[in-house]
Amino acid sequence: MRILLVEDDPAQLEPLHTVLLQAGHIVDGLEDGETAQWLLSQKEYDLLILDWMLPKVSGLSLCRQYRSLGKTAPVLMLTAKDTIADKVAGLDAGADDYLVKPTDLIELLARVRALGRRSPVLQVDTLTVGDLHLNLNTLTVEGETNKVQLTAREFQLLEYFFRHPGQVLSRDRIEDALWEWGTEPESNAVTTLVKRLRQRLQALNATDWIETIYGMGYRFKAPHVQS
Image (cartoon, rainbow, N blue to C red; front, side):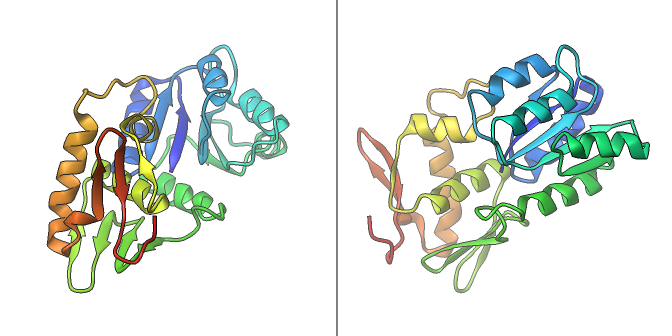
């Protein structure tokens, strides 16, 4: 999932950002509501995690504005406000769930998984292309006789390939899909990542499933997937 995480306290933002990245998500982490407001006009997200009290534009206002645009991605509110009236206000603004601070990281991941299952695109736990199965919860890919554990970044790339089988994906498109906002990947970052992923897939006899289309990018093409 691509997640927008907005938390104005760096001491709280960092562990939340880290645990979500480790779970295989692509996370744009911000500290103020105004920047988040702009970013929401530029990108599409699968999930928003918003602190209620943010500088410039509150999380509650962000949620309300987001819903007014007809956007339907789930919204999880993080806040120290724990009265019934506060919870009602958050839900009425369009939030789908509510987590009271201090945030338990294990519970946060469970809430994220639950909210992800509400999306028709994201509700499955396993993606399948040919005879390979990608487990979205364990970051593993399994063939007929073997299973391989992936790093978070390797998983993100393979998930992207699984969701676009047979398509030619340019390096720019892959960078835009996988790297967080505000980061600048090195010029050979995609090439290096593809090389690492091919090495992982070697244990599943699927190294050649990632085709290099010279001058254009890469294509994930299983034996039974037509381009």
